Image (cartoon, rainbow over all chains, first blue to last red; front, side, top):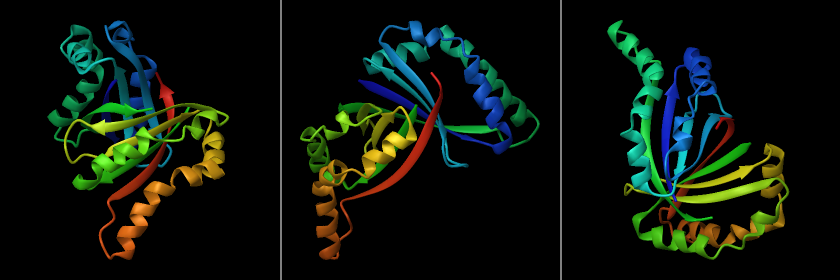
Length: 106
Length: 106
């Protein structure tokens, strides 16, 4: 099983908006071949990163998702807020670090 | 759903031993009330942390596990290697950072 994790460092005044983005997500990812499940994790300790985790049969299934139109459309709302901040010369409301993993034991 | 993640920074010459610890794990955790599942993640990129993730109905279920005899027994082999290194005045073969999360979207 392949797991992709996006570690999101969210500015304190953006966490509510960030959580809203997922409350209203399109669920297009759920229909992708090889998709197993997805979890979005809120840190128990303030100031820690949020984690967006998706589980896939295989890395190639995940790559197909990132190249799909649904992926690009689904990320537009979040990307727009980052673009707006950049245009205004402000620090972006969130930063992400992307890492990938293979499950080797359960 | 409550998720506990232990981020393990493993010295390069200890990764094989670390992975073995899980290949032979006792599976006592699987019988704990509120336990949902567990995954141990190997980073795709060398030098990144391993992740030991366990999924629980509730934080209290996880806490009961950490107080159980099975938890203490199950961690002995790994802890021993750390103790040995300390006694020998060497850097421990692995370091862990523990974080907890709540799933707020799927």
